[in-house]
Image 1: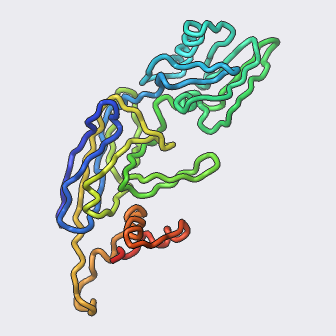
Image 2 (image 1 turned 90 degrees about the vertical axis):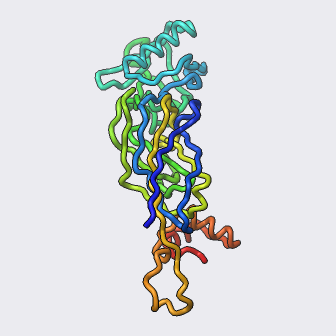
Length: 294
């Protein structure tokens, strides 16, 4: 059975976590695609100039990019931002013995909005805004963030692709899905290599689909990870033999490999669309593992 191995990498320094490519395909109709390994450096922009928070109706914008932070460095940076950039002297960030961050002020505090990256860092992933301060001592108000922040993105990363298999995630009040080719669950540290092998996902696609493949590195909440280092992938393509024609008497030949292909939702829906058929969301789960439409 024909197998082809590829090593590919990102080529645009402004989008290191994204790869657009085309892969030479086997001379069959279908093939199996597996991302056998992913390698990059953990130089992840966890806080950027686009990030902000809105406190007491005032929007404070971050004035720099950061790829490595901790509770101490984050509180120090936010205090410098308040005092030096915005001239605020009645509010200050602190962190407790568990590395949970809080704000203390002589005035009442209300956090009404916050960018995604700051929600991760401040421990607000599962918290609904606005948040109100409480009076801890006379004329001292404290706004505490309940969870420890995720200081180097989420602990699970995903490699998504237009040819991936559906993976479902429960969000706060909804369930969403993403087409996934790889799950990275190993521990990684800032400025150290991320190296992971694939033990979860293999997808079956038409060989013609390999002419336009997108790979995107995302965090556990399906947000694109901003990398400052190139992304490298190794890809294995395994050809699936084409179905042989035995006429109407199928007992004369062996089981046809394509009869057993577990089709991805992507491939199944595309095949139906080409044939002018509609399928409902309720019908999809029962129809994914079927013989390909002829």
